[in-house]
Structures are given as C-alpha cells and as structure tokens.
Image 1 (cartoon, one colour):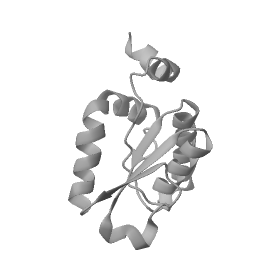
Image 2 (spheres, rainbow, N blue to C red):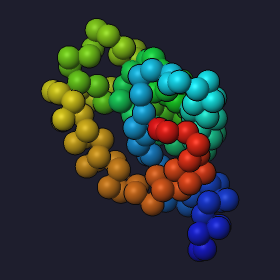
Image 3 (cartoon, helix red, strand yellow):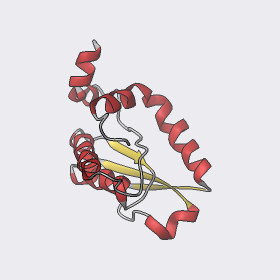
Image 4 (cartoon, one colour):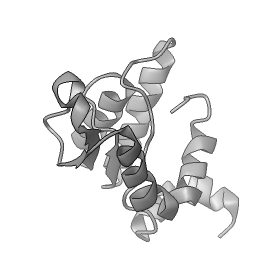
Length: 135
C-alpha cells in the first residue's frame, strides 16, 4: 500500500478495519478562526460516515463538541475522557460512552496509551489531510 493510497483511501482504512477508534486532541473553545470549526465538523462527518468511534476529551463545547456531535450525527460513536474536576463545566452528556479520569494527567494517559499508540500512523494521515486545522 503506497502512502498515496492511504491518504486518498480512507474508505480502505475503514473497510479493512485497520483503524476503528481514532483519538483527537483539540480545544473546548472554537479558536480564533471560524475555519477551525468548519474543519472540525468536516472531520467528524468523515469519521462518522465510516462508522468509526471517536475518542476525545469529553467536552460539549468548542472544537471538541463540534467533532463529537458531527461524528455521532453521521452514524459514528464518541467516547469522552473527562477529568472529574471538569464534570460540571463542559461535560458532554450525549456521548456513546464516558470514561472518568482522576485528573488531566490521567486523562492524557488514558487517551494516549489506550488509543493513540495504536493509531500513530492514522493520526499522521489526519494531520496531513487537515493540516490547516490545529487539532
């Protein structure tokens, strides 16, 4: 499989089940440019249409909420990893699953060790395709 096939063949990735649970690290705010929200929405739709399960920070607001809502609206699932200290602030209550973390450090460990290590190649593809979006 050439790199070009991978970048242009996200259907191939989903059909072969090489990637089923991408982890996205992004903010609970929309950012300075409205294009960030548009790209987050497009990325969420892309993942959801392929039936993938998103793992992200668990917030209902900002880029995090946009990606999660778009994934679920397009038929995918969303797993949030939220530290207990932030439950009352921006917790997304409509997720497929919510993982409780003791603190921010534990949250990052859960997301990175459980999901990102397995998905480093796919995340590189996402960055390449959406490099104008600073997720």
